[in-house]
Length: 340
Image 1 (cartoon, rainbow, N blue to C red):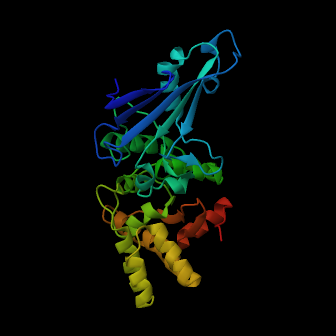
Image 2: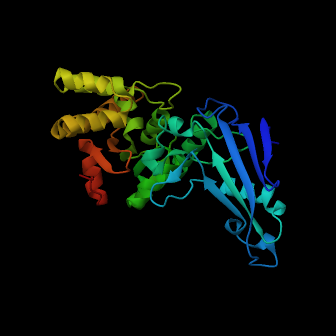
Image 3: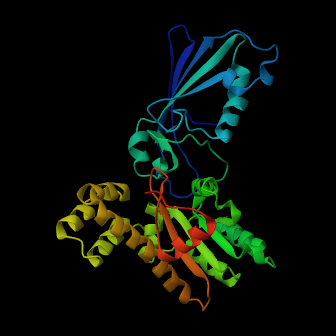
């Protein structure tokens, strides 16, 4: 049951507003206690079938993205998971009267501001938070169970199989989808979540020859600071790492100060490109090389292996922008080029 904190009918009783708060389950989550408004209204619509339960959900329930709810930038459609769609149909579909459909507008009053603290835009979701739905148990990319599943899959695909010696390591489902869209499906891809350190070591133990780290710049920058568990509740330091790299590269003091005052990695990138695009290119390729160097140093703590590690970074617009020297060689073998 969803606890409703406030509710009211409007007009002739065909409209209603309900307010509740998000409870994401165990673990830390920025949506905890997020206020959720739901406006519902029955509207008349000609029947298209004598069996309402057999028709598509979209014919009977129209889910509208209100303020603070994310939409796909490419289509403008609400960003809602199939799981959430199924929940709506199972709980509300039987309540829709004949010759009507249910218009359901969802509002996250603080969703737009909270979305700025996520990487949603990097994965094509704009204007707010995605509507995912709830599960009995939260499946976190930071959980030990998730790490164990990743390690087991890694061992499985590399066991006695020489064709799986080249591996791409991505963070999360969106990184996986982007890697596949770029054509990296020609080699094995592992979705690591936030547990990059143990997965990198295990890949070397399993005999992987080439490992490509493929991720959003706001995640992989942490590796350049020797942070190998990338969940934001455990460690951040993204802008501090970027500022330190700017110092090492000898960027002007005014530029370094501007970077240190940025509110996000993307804002730092935009600031630097506005000041001097050549400096931006220099710094971000330096970042990719720093990720490769620090990852090799991390791996050397646990043993001696010949695995080559490359780092490739994409931005919020999902453009593959930067790569370290090892990654550039790896991408050439795969026939993948960087965006300008």
